[in-house]
Image 1 (cartoon, one colour):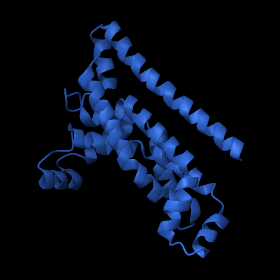
Image 2 (cartoon, rainbow, N blue to C red; image 1 turned 90 degrees about the vertical axis):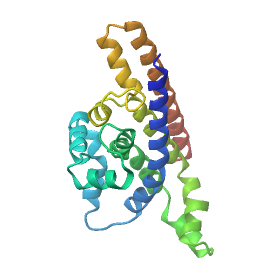
Image 3 (cartoon, rainbow, N blue to C red; image 1 turned 180 degrees about the vertical axis):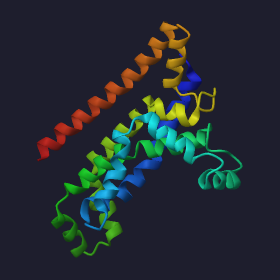
Image 4 (cartoon, rainbow, N blue to C red; image 1 turned 135 degrees about the vertical axis):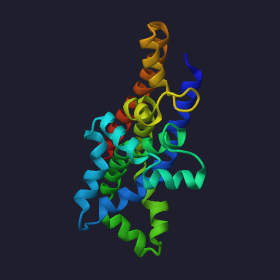
Length: 221
């Protein structure tokens, strides 16, 4: 087992999930309840990573994060670190690539909350922020939990975008998925099998959790 690679993958998955969860709420709430010009375009952009090949998205992110671009040069001037082939760039790429896995379950959860419930909360004297924390988020928790599980599990096993943006630098950007590929290339089938089994176990736990949530939501309906 490549423990540093597994630790890096867990760190990346945890950081991506913690950052994406509040962003998902901010994006999903207006997408679920408001109609505005360009809404379909925004939803298409959010869902785009689902249909783009990871290497294609990784290539464009690699170009966008380069030192010759505004984003890359600005980030380096502010932090003294590059975005390409660093954990920072890996994290930003992971956030972009996992956006639909976080936003779409939360959007569906908010969409399932009846408008009358929100209006009743407002009529009872709650501010919109209080209604969000005390009414909306507790009702939307299945979608939030689904987003957490999907984002964490998908980040843990991602290969294409991670390889394109982060490369294969030990203790910096080498995740467990890349380490599995390295072991296969080196004909270390035993090491690759152990790490693959670990990812399979995480995936099974994630799928089981989502199925249980789906059944609970179905019973409520």
